[in-house]
Amino acid sequence: MTDEEIKLFSHSSLICDNHLYNDGELTTDFSTIEYLMSIAPQFGDVFFSCKWTLQNQSCHNFFTPMLTEEGLCFTFNMLDKTELLRNNVFLHDENYMSHGMKADGWTLEDGYPKTTSKDTYPRRALSAGFSAGFFLLLTAYEQDLDYVCKGPVQGFKILLHNPAEIPRVGMQYFRAPLNQEVVVAVKPDMMTTSDGLRGYDPHRRNCFFPSERHLAYYQSYTQQNCQVECLANFTLERCGCVAYHMPRK
Image 1 (spheres, rainbow, N blue to C red):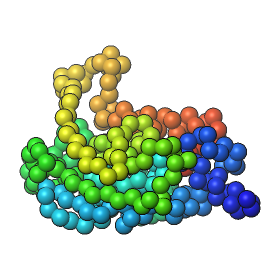
Image 2: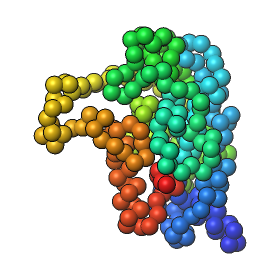
Image 3: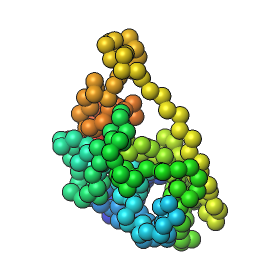
Image 4: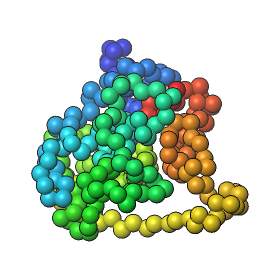
């Protein structure tokens, strides 16, 4: 291969399993991110049809592209970058992770205000069952299937996450195989902490209220956001750089 081909192959290997190639350069620049975005399946190639509460709508109304450790992904119902990230986070594109819809008073700790209408953001399910849910018809092209990068299993990785968190697709997901219908039922398990415990030291009650913990990159404190930030800080301290998908200044 030419030097240019080796460089692009090295970029591609960042989203493949480690067996493929690990002799690339130690660091990358923003051309790497642009390249990964350009070779990923584009929006119109992935989403064929979308229904929210059984109403046909354009998929562009629902999804926002973003980079994860798995490459380019599309996220539904996540907060806009202005409400998710702090101003010190550097983004390679001003439109990245931006959809322009503001949360109508919703917070992770308190939920929706009582005065919120049914048509709000983040979108909420108004009842149980298929008719109140989200329907997707996804497409994949045979010439795009790659059995070397990620192994023999093909299909889509889908992750459920709350609107105030960054999806970590490499950590937990379920798979939607090709040529199959997958129906997912979400059964929430909600754990709350009494306000009467606010007077206790966080280390004594063994948890933080979101308002008690300031994160450098994220506006909402959650355990997962904290873990992502800690991993980015540790990587920066140990290696002098962070992975292309991590938050950074």
